Every structure is written in structure tokens, then in C-alpha cells.
Length: 162
Length: 195
Image (cartoon, rainbow over all chains, first blue to last red; front, side, top):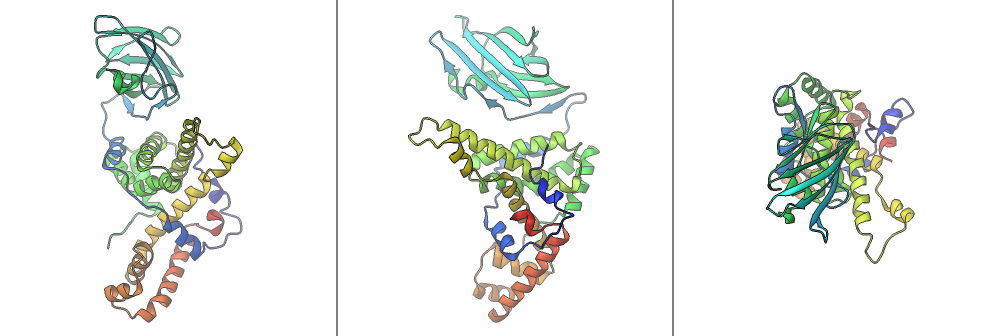
């Protein structure tokens, strides 16, 4: 990946003039702040020891369809999100007995999918399952040997949906 | 006086330790680069919440890439550049979400208003290096530049706190800034990087 300032390295051997006082002062004028404690803790935690044999990443998921749940007229919830080169589309429909039927599809180099700790058979990326609740059931995708810890189903479909 | 401490060589050393599985080194690297990475999106006009997201995403990517960084000496540049590119993506995403607003800029006009990630990254990297370098200057220069530049103290206060005559602050400041410029030059910073 480009570091975005390749020109400074590329020009290292060309004629270069010392940075001016004005440029230094201008650079120092901008905001210089610390992140929130939570963000800092999350970043530090990336380096914490993990169980042997599994590497976890905790990416930010980008919601491409709905950041919050979209409840259709048929009482279904739909959402799409992507992270780490994997995309997940899913629909949840109430089974009328307090549970939910899920139908979805994953894209990308996905090797396995777990919902609520249960492996989901994938047929050309498609899957179907039922869950008793959306609440705290986590979505995990394994791609290229790395477990990508996703949001919970409730977060996926939007906090307002549960 | 608070100082920032790690040089590019120190950061590269941390990268090598991380590659060997040293978790404490990762925390140290996060701490050292935290203000740099967080400040890039802030300088590009994003909110603190958005900057927190960019911050986490940048370190996530760094964590995934730390084993393959070509030049560990440039880990700070890599982080600043990544944060700047992610910030630009976030800014453009915000703009798309405002599509229903009464005033929608044309794509060209909107793109022209975008900050330039390379320049923002380079400026933030210079700020980081300058702060680090100030901390490494002789005590007199370090304290003076910290008060003058970073704390924006007035000359009367500087005179009082450092015990030097007001009349000598200006010339001393100029000499210290020159030392700072030379130090930054020795680290490879040039005017071409930031203009």
C-alpha cells in the first residue's frame, strides 16, 4: 500500500532545500490531539496475545446498504456491509415465534462463516439459518486464515430492530 | 516539560520488535504515533468521532501490514499517509450522504474542494517530526521553542519562566529554529516535501 507521501522518498536524492521556518510553523499550527481513550485502547488491544492458531482482526465494517435497519413492508430486515475485502448481505425475517430466519450471501475470499458461534454451510457463498434472537449473536468470517470479528446481528441490522 | 521522544530509528526498532512478537512494542508504537494518526483526519476537517474511526482503521491496517513494511524507518510516514487516504474516503462518503441537500456541488467542484492527502500527510508528518525534534534539542532551545511555538506564550511569560531577558528571546528563538531546521533536514525533510 502506498504511504501517501511517496514523493518525499522519491525526491530524496534530488535537489532538496531545507524546510523553511514558515513551513515548520505552519505544520505546527494544525490540531494536535489525542484520540479517545476507547479508540486508543482498541488500537493497543490489536497487539494483545491471542489464542494460538487464530488471528483475529476487529475491522470497522462499512455499511453499504443500511447503517440502521431497513424494515420492509414484509417485516424483513435487510443490511449489507463490507470489511477486509469481504462483503456480507443478509436478510432477517421473523419466524412468528420470536425467532428469526436468516438468508444471506458472502463475497470475497471467505473460507468460513459463523453466526452466534455456529458454522454456516456456504453454497456458493449463500447461507440460511435460524436464530432465536438477534441480540448478542456475533458474526465471524474467516478469510485467508484470519478471523474477522464482525458486529452482532443486532448491530448488523441496526440497534433499533431488536 | 512534556517531551515526545522516539526518533525514526526508535520507531523502526519497535517495528522489528513487533515482528518478533513483542506485544509491548506494539503498544509503544501506538502511543508514539497516536497524536500523529489522530491529528491527520482532524486537520482534514473530520470530527473527533470520525477521527477515532480513522485512527482505529489505520492501526488495524498497520497491524496487518507491519510484517511487510518495506522500510520500518518510514512507519510514521506510512501511518500518516494511510490516515490521510482514509480521511479523504470518509470526506467523500460524507458528501455522498448529503446528496439530498439543497446545494449539491458538481463532482468536479467537490473534488476541487477536497484536501490533498499527500500534502496533509506530509504536513502532519513534519509536525510530528518537529515536535519530536524539539524534544531532542538542548534544554534551552527545547524549553524556548516549546513555550513560543507549542504553548504560544508571550515574551513576558517566557522571560519570567525561563529567566532570560525579553530582548534576547527573539535572537535565541531564531537560533533555535535554525537548529530545528537542521535537525529536520538531517532526517530527510525538505521544503519540497511540504510545498
